[in-house]
Length: 244
Ligand SMILES: C[S@@+](CC[C@H](N)C(=O)[O-])C[C@H]1O[C@@H](n2cnc3c(N)ncnc32)[C@H](O)[C@@H]1O
Image (cartoon, rainbow, N blue to C red):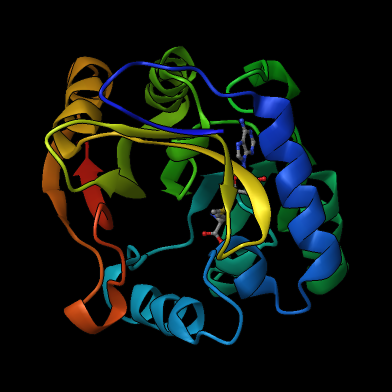
């Protein structure tokens, strides 16, 4: 229906969930199912390699990891050794089913089909504190209040010495861009997402995580080299924070 510049418009979480359930059904490659690019493009796979090689936190000891919006378990596989324990949340039951099928029977890795941030801590299958929290490409599908509440939840369940990695698709303009019920020719689907400005996302992290004792190590740098950036109005940026 529309591209909305600047105004704070809400999107419908149920439509986002249906969209990702549809991706899980129709996309054979698990990376392409969640890192959205046009048919035949290798950018998603190349970004996956770059992120794993250059961006994700390296763990010095066995860690307890929480991932919000884990999709088909791309990062669960990456951390699946060294004695780590991992819990991934995603509200697409079909992506979670793929993640579980892919990982097989491994008691150190658990997934839960839940909507972020609508989950009580006592219902987490793996209990806090978490040493590492990962969020890649989630916040663009959450409305403002849910983004704020998610960061509050992260601050609460993170260990005193925790690391947080956030990679997000953000607006390259001075204002946010909201795609609301927008037909994407590239994806051949109706699509909903909110591309916030880097300043907006930094502010909400400052009000929640920095307030809870975290410090930025990286704050909004481009996640990928120019060859892996292909949009005019949006770009993937990343943040790392540490406490303790
Ligand atoms: C772009 S994909 C990224 C998946 C994964 N983080 C990765 O990088 O491979 C976004 C994911 O967020 C999930 N998602 C969106 N909104 C959510 C919400 N409110 N609660 C839980 N999962 C959500 C989608 O189902 C989808 O799997």
